[in-house]
Amino acid sequence: MLVYAGSYPEPARCTVNEQSKYRKLPSVDVVLDQLAAPHHVAVQAARAAIEEARQEVAAGRPAPTVAQVVAKARLALAGDERRRLQRVINATGILLHTNLGRAPLGPQQLEAVRAVASGYSNLEFDLGTGKRGSRYTHTRAAICRLTGAESALVVNNNAAAVLLMLSALCRGKEVIISRGELIEIGGEFRIPDVMRNAGVTLVEVGTTNRTHPSDYAGAIGPRTAAIFKVHPSNYKMIGFTKDVPGRELGRLAANNGLLFLHDLGSGNLEASPGSPFRHEPTILDALTDGADLVTFSGDKLLGGPQAGVIAGKTTLIDQLERDPWLRALRVDKMTLAALGATLELYLMDLSSNIPIARMAHMSLHDLEARAKALASAIDDPDAGRKASAVAVTGAAGGGALPGEGFDSWAVAVECEHLSAQAIAEALRLGDPPVIARIENDRLLLDLRTIASEDDSLVARLAGRVFSP
Ligand SMILES: *Cc1c(COP(=O)(O)O)cnc(C)c1O
Image 1: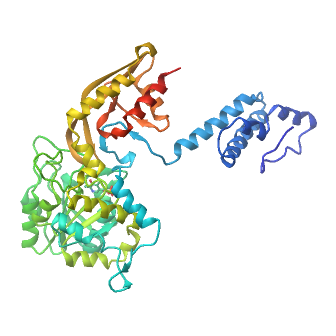
Image 2 (image 1 turned 135 degrees about the horizontal axis):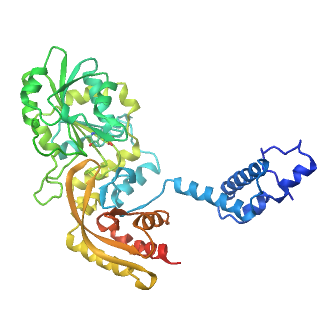
Image 3 (image 1 turned 90 degrees about the vertical axis):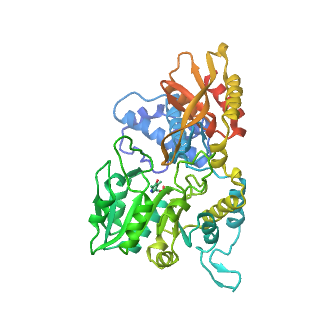
């Protein structure tokens, strides 16, 4: 029996002879029987695969077999499944991997989201007066206490923070920036483009590798609104280089009645000598150096949700809060809840409960022990699989600490007859997917970014990949 799929036209004008060519094709029901997927999804895949087979026949080629049609439908379903947003295991060793969603959230951060999002909240309601309130007040005090800022505002991400700051305060005027800081962060976020989109005139000073205080001073004119400093993020210049420290720019701006704005990229709160982030400028340092406003991301070194924080002078923050653009860039309640919980963990000195901080601080001793245990669980010479623990150097990622390696331990996996790429692909197509790193043609599973409770799952997934 031929079952035509909904909208596919019945070949009404075919002769009986021509119609019989299609009789070899399976019905939707026959294909459906062999697909393990929710009905509505499977029906679509089955119909599409049958239609493709029909077109083969119509073009005069031999009719695909039932097995071939089913295989086509399965391929389409697998593609759908891979496109679904889902959890993956990050074994790349890159802590803040933008493509893998940057900072994971811990139990306290998630509980805060659950509590606020599962019911109503005082998002824009003042519990003291019973009147309308502002969504921007909830996290303000915590940001100020942690960074030393007078006031603060949270928006959708740091790109939005930069855009709002420049647009609200400098539109139609000139903003001075060093040529060494005209960076691209990735995902088409280019500082010169953002500045133009904010309606400011870019005044580039210095050269790619060297910018002096006199370059800035010489560029100040009647239309200058601000000096803008940008953290070079994901790239580092070495050799014959010079940039002007924030403190000098702060002084220059103040002496000329200009604003000094500083995009820090990754907001670093930690300054302790033992911190792996000790070479990254802190927010407090940037404000002390005289920045009128600083901006940073919520989901980089801070370890919170995607958000952009603007911190600094109250008068300026008030101005941003009145800007019509803010509505388009505004942050939602789940983000505010997660960010609030993140800040609270820092305030209570409980940052070890923030996954990014915990992973960054995990000792090499612990990582080595986990790598050795995982290697011995994966290693199986009889199955043609060799695994060994190796000392490696990872990266912070997310534009933080460019050029600085993060020492770590990994499991190197080798398989007979399989390239490192082939092993990586098999792991990537697992459930859940494991994203590994390839270095010098060797497949590595870096323990620093794998949650320790996932070690045994990674061992199981790696074992499954290679078993026949
Ligand atoms: C990452 C980064 C941004 C963009 O931040 P998002 O939160 O990803 O929007 C902007 N500026 C700098 C310097 C950065 O490092």
